[in-house]
Length: 248
Image (cartoon, rainbow, N blue to C red; front, side):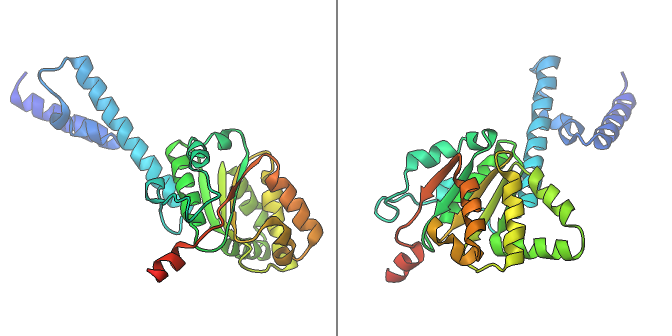
């Protein structure tokens, strides 16, 4: 085989690899080892392609999730002094994400600044790494989006999109009082996911106070019933890290 033929072959390999979106194979010269067999080199290239595809898929899922900020479990501070009711072993078990496969929920309740958003974001990030689709929404943002969708007559489309995701994280529920319309829309989302998809909710209020921001005791009771049934409840009441840092 001549040098010209080798060059033409490489050009064609690069062209076809680019067309098929196979960057590792396109740059095979960097990865192929003369000391390895054909099968070993082929396996190595396929492993590289798989790793690249997996990383790109995770990036797309993280972007689609809509996190306000990305957080991981290794930066979360477990402290019996600050969070006396939160069990590290229980959290580490939830990181296995079996609750998503079992279509159960997580509700994290605690006063402001105890790391609820951080911890639930970390759980959602781990779910993405394990191949699950995730959507992260602050409660106030979600009800606004739902209300706009209803006004623009594409509420059904938005509800279908939300219901398709395997894990929905609803953050900061209870910080703002909802009007009747917003409460109804939020109930539609959570009721549709009941025993079908998993939902994570964070709130600064204990369940007995949910009628205060929902504005309807019957609806609040029905909502709590659906969330609590087959759920893990995390008590994250404790000393807020912002207060602690301020004291320092």
